[in-house]
Structures are given as structure tokens and as C-alpha cells.
Image 1 (cartoon, rainbow, N blue to C red):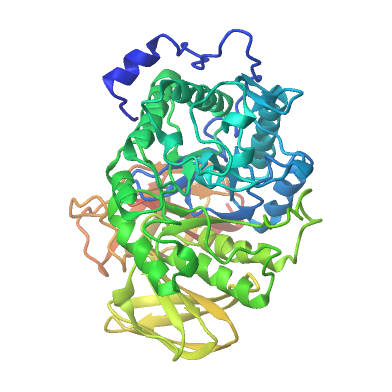
Image 2: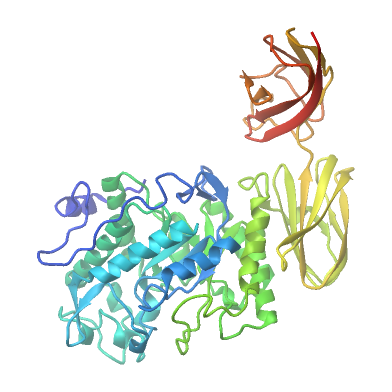
Length: 589
């Protein structure tokens, strides 16, 4: 929970109600409020893991990759439901959305948060219910399709001079009736728009942001971004951090907040500021658009020490109508995978702002579904991982990769991941691994499909994998053999106490709580009807790769003669689930 300054707490005490904390001036049109979107702490509730580094969706650690038209909310004819549904089969789990954007020309039927008079000018104290209803509709449509909205409150690009930017902005003095002391047409509105000493301007900005927070207050699938491509002063950012902090205290819930800054000093401010929950690294310290894959990886890896989820609102090679080439698609996909292996997540855009050709949403604006399979590949692969929270970039374990490729590696205690951008083929070698049996799985990122699975053995910490020739890229997952159990005495007589003896072998060291021993928790189930819960198993002392035996005695069970299946399901104190099934026989009475 953020802690706003005392000044902000006192300032808002008179305008924040206990439930609907938004103050709206007399006569202003209010939007309706939305019911819970995402069903409480349900499948769409986005939060942050306890280690602070990962996003959690519906209680499950996840990486969010996705795309969409970031101007869709502003485009009146744009079919929000159609777009949201389009990405669902491809596991597109996040889309970046601008609330205010003036790139959309008037012939694109733009919609804005405020009422516009017959003279074309806005009243920034009067909200347009149609816009806020459209935003609520967008939130609900994306929740139903499994997507999180990265919702931008402000956009610095819209403050730049130009006929379709600041000149058309609702805060431009020529475009509203509120008498703001801001630059007129033909000038940038930076830095004047960021002046916290301009009380009249700040009050209208506050009014808008509070109304936005009121609208999204029950939406579980929203991450708030203060401003797109920010270059302004830190006091203006701190103002919104404090305001959101006050809203959190009033509402009794956490609102995830990030910002897209454009220089190193602003990024340092965001890294150190407890009110910034996620770091958007698209533009700071420089744009990822011109960075190599290695530079992108280094940026994300370098920011992991901030212990905040890392995300980029854009990736540079945008898959839109300006360059729908296979080369650009390949670069975009490899950028996604590079970010994934470095510990981040990403949203990208699919729009062409130069002539506003994309108005109505997919599949009318779809270039080809390979763009969506790009997301499916990384999302599907990450969903197969056994320890997403424990995964960390590990350049040190990568000993060799196919010649001429760019290869990245990451590892957790249970698995090793590699992504190699080719073309290539040949040996991929790891070092510093734990000895023991492993399963090696190969994955095709372009086709979003598993290629093969085989068993191998790590000896002396080394593992060499022979990769087949690949024309673009390949991903590798090495699964370390989990805690295993062997049933020693499977033959028993019905109506007698069933005595089962197991030998457990731990190859990986499951002492996750640091107390020098491993605890196992779980249950035994007979035919899904008889359940025995095991609080803990002894002996408690256990060393990696050391076997021990344990005997469990069940109460008498009435089982008919024949073959039955025993399902062993245990969970270590590190949270790993180990499940095995054994066949056993009961004899006739």
C-alpha cells in the first residue's frame, strides 16, 4: 500500500467520499460505476508476487505478452468486443490502451472523456457518459477474453506541436472553454502541462484522473500507466503517485501503477519510488526500437535488482501495416522471446497511425495470423514451466550455442530454458547444472508447437543437446527429474490394513525454507473415494540425492477384488507438486 504525504491526505479528505471517492462538480455528468470485473480475486485478478518481480494472474504467476490497437478506445467505430475476442485463442493476455489520443483525426470519429459543445470545444468539468460507458465496455470485453489492460492516463506525444497532436488536444486553450494558461496552436505544451504550481490546470487534471480511478476501481484486469513517453519533472509524477495512494487507502485495495519515462534519471526515480509498482522500460534510458537483442536483454537483466515486474509497452518492431514483412515479424517474435528470457513481459501495438487505415478492429485489419501466433508461442511455452517465479536469466550456464546464433538462457531450480535465434543447428551446451536425469523438450516459436521430447543425463554438471537444423529460431526446455517415489510392496488383501512402503529420491534439494530438511505434504487417494492427508513425512533430515524410506499405514479399506490404482500426490515445502500413479491388486475374500 502506498503512503501519500500528509499534505495530500489532508487535501483529499474533503473531496474523497468513503466509497465513491471521486469529487465531481455540481452539474457535471457522471459515468455509471462498474460492478466487479474479473470476479474478485478470480482468473483475471492481476497482482504482484511476494518476491515483487512477477505478475500474478488469478493467483498464478504468469508472463503477460500481447498486442492490440492502442488507439481503439478513442476510435468511435472501433469494435472493442471483436478485437478482444480476436486475441483470446492466441493467449494474448495484455493490451496497451490510450485514454486520450489526438492522433486519430476527426474523420475517424474520435471520442474523448469530456462533453464537446456545438462549437467543437470541450468543457473539462463535464464528462461525456458515452465515453466512460465505452471504457467500462472495453474493460468487460477484455476481462471476458482473458486480457489485462495497460491503461494510459496521459500521453506526452499528444502535447507535441502539429496539426493532429496538441492543436487538437482537449486541453489546448483553443479546444476548451476553461480558460487554461497553456500554449496555443503551433507550440509544444511541454513543460507547461506538467506545472504543479498551476492550480487551475492541476485541478482539472485531478478531476479527470479521479473519474478514471472511479471507473476502474472494481476492475481486476487493469494496470495504470501515468503517461506515455514522459520527459517532464518528477514532482508531477509524484503528484499522481500520491493521488493513487490516497485512492488505495480510501478503497482498501491496491491499484497497480507504472509509468513510461524517457531518460535514465526518471527511470532511477521510478526504481526507487515505492509508489511505482512496475517498470516500463520501453523508452528509458533510450528506445528499444534501435536496440539489439543483446542490448534488450542487458537492460532487463540490469533492472531485475529493482525487484519490480518489468514490462515494455512497446517493442520497437511493431507488427502493423507499415511493415508486415516476414523479416519484421521474425524480429518482433525474437524480441518477445529475448524479453521473456531476461525476466520481463511485453505488449505491442498493431495499428498504423500514419493514415488511420485501421478503424474497425480484427479481422478486418488483420495482416496475417502469424502475428498472433507470435504471442501464442511465448505464452504457451511459459505456461508449461514448473517454476516461473524461480526463473532467472543465467548467461553463466550457457557454455556453447550453434555458430552464428544469438542465444539466451534462464534457469530455476527445476528447469533450464534457452532461446536461440538463427538460422542454426548443432550443439547447445550447458554447464553448472545438478547431476541427474533430465527431460529435454524442443519447441518451435514460429509454429507455436512442441517438436520433441527425450531423456538425457547431466554428468559433471554438463549437458550437451544436439539441435536439429532450424531456419529461424528454436527454444529448449530442460526439466530436471523431480522428487521420485517407488512403491515397494504393492500386493495387499482387502479388509486388511494396507501397508505401503515408498522410497523417495530427491535429486534437486527441496529444502526451500532453509531449515536443513525437506518436508513433504500431500495425500493418498484410493479410487478417488478414500483420502488420507499426510501432514509431514519423516525422517526430516535429508541430503540431495539421498534416498530414504517411509511407511504409511491406512485404515482398513473395503475394496473389491481386482486391480486398483493408487495415486500418490505430495507437495514439498517449496510448493512443487509430485504426482505418481501405481497399480496394485487386492485378492478375493
